[in-house]
Image 1 (cartoon, rainbow, N blue to C red):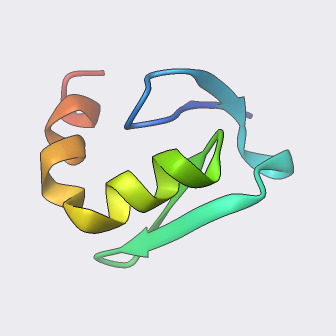
Image 2 (image 1 turned 60 degrees about the vertical axis):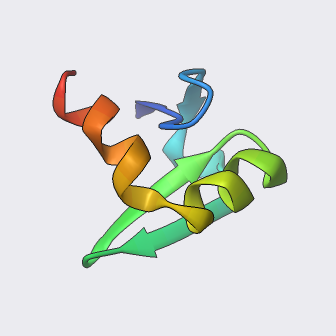
Length: 53
């Protein structure tokens, strides 16, 4: 399934994503370690973007 990286907005495939984080019981996938680290610093900032999808 294609998903959107909440940090860089790049489309990724969740089944092949290496970089993942959990927040409030949900798993988020990232295209790179740098995007994962950025999300982990302030998840709420990036979740605002996802609500608009």
